[in-house]
Image (cartoon, rainbow, N blue to C red; front, side):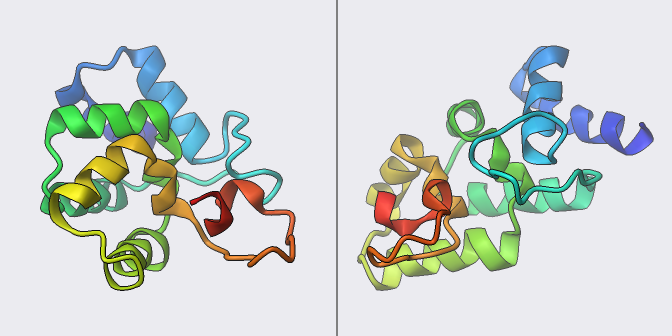
Length: 137
């Protein structure tokens, strides 16, 4: 509970209600149902350092607090994603393979933040991970 409460404090700057904070953390860490994770998400304890690192990284991409609020409302699971293996990797894919950078990247993330958590590209040979597949992009 101490870790949960500490993580909730991170969201206080966004002026979410306690219920909204619990919903974000619940969806991100497997305590609430999320179609995004499917059956693969095991219940995990949120780590304050990881959440702060994710926010810092997203802000380094030019996103403001208002932008983070929009992303969290559309894709609360982002705080449960791996910074190194998902977020940074996917930003590199967007920049290198799709040449999406700067303002275009920011606009894309606001429109479709789930791209931050994609983990597979089935290339049409379905792997039944549709909510986390680049084919949606």
